[in-house]
Length: 488
Image (cartoon, rainbow, N blue to C red; front, side):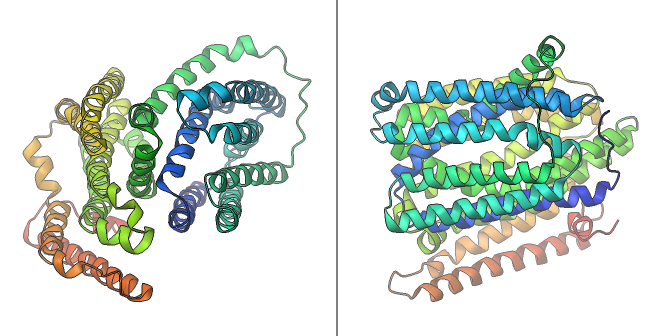
């Protein structure tokens, strides 16, 4: 018998959002502390390995457990079979990682890999064992349990990593963080599931699920290239030090995207699915989703770009200042990425499924070409190449959506005027006062943080005030602030 569905949708969605926000906040807090204790090169080394683990999770583990979760007969017997396959795949992957350690150390010119890869193989095994337990809880909509798991695991991993960094230092501090976090997460998942797998059952399911597994694996691989391909390219072409700076900038900007943009994108799935048969309702839903995305992300990414140097100086240390220009470029990339993804979700809702795939493939190809060309001149140019690739696919992507919605580009821009005008005026004022924002090394730490916080508050107040002014003066402009406050 399959699992009954919990119909308390709003509560489950709330716990899902809490899980996402808690992970981003705690991870960023731990990173803020470790950034002052660990060198950029060490972060670059672990970023390369994190990409490898992410590839395994998206292309292999998810491909095994997602087809099971999608069936109406998602029984414990099927999850036991999935767990056995995941463990087999994880064991094979861990053995490969250990086996290629000497070669990988020489090829990447990273001597630390000889000590790191065996420990990261343990992380892979923990993820392999966790996949079926996590998928089973997601199918049961046990998002509260998953949120608790995330908070405890991330916090424990952070404490272990920080303690190791204070005592010993070096890249092994980050490895200790990864090992502790993944193992604690596995223990909690097992405890929360109240389930004892029977790995001897379900041996004949491969033929049934293999077509879906291959399809999900291909989709996961495409998703991996879209989200992590840039980091892979930086590590191969520019090395560990550049990867450290790039990963730092990506972590800051992607935190805004994951905390707010990804949450809005989740809402778009149900909004477009509900309205897809009514052209006018679909158009309104599209403008609401895009308007809310702009309202939340535009001021944060633009404000971060303007204040990035004092932010790095105060919170992370001057060793990370070379990443400042990368943050500016990736801020533009993530804003464009949200627009492209909202458009993709809309096209999926109206059964235009080839366009998002073509957009994704085109962006990946252009990222490789522009990224490689930019790498000849340094990391900043390489990041600019990635941003240019994301922008290059937007006009065609946007024109396709506008055609189906009977939406003129001028109409779209007019609806977005409140966040656009508010954010750009905020940036202009912050830029005007930028010389006053410079924070001196001699200032005490609390004074530096207070000064930075005051400027952030000033920018936020300017943005909100101008947003309200535009809403009052221009009829028909989308008011995302009203929706965020829960008013229709």
